[in-house]
Image 1: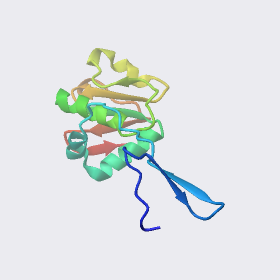
Image 2: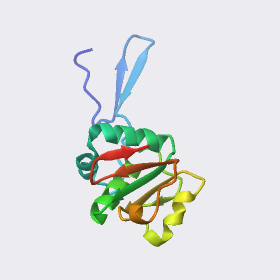
Image 3: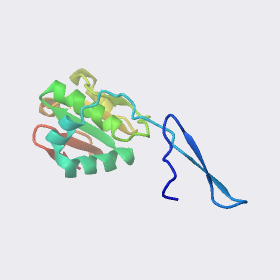
Length: 144
């Protein structure tokens, strides 16, 4: 058994004769590469930390209403992309607006799950609905 080669691209299948009547075929697993999303997970981890990232992952998988906010639009969109990408192989099927203009803030009252990113100045004008999970990317805080 120690002399059996491992399957390789040159020899993707190896037939191993276990006995006169039993044979085993060894093959390489099907390669399923990660999708090219452009998501920057280091930005997500630097702005939220591992514990808050795990909590955020839980809320995403539970299809909660998620409001990301920051004063830095580049961070906001980068983190939003990483949040959507981190549920691979699943896909977010609900509304996703990585950078929502303040004039369209009424979308936060929608009766369905969403991931929306807004400028933090939104809170100068509006109070978020009670059923929304707010994530402040500037202070590394989650508000339930």
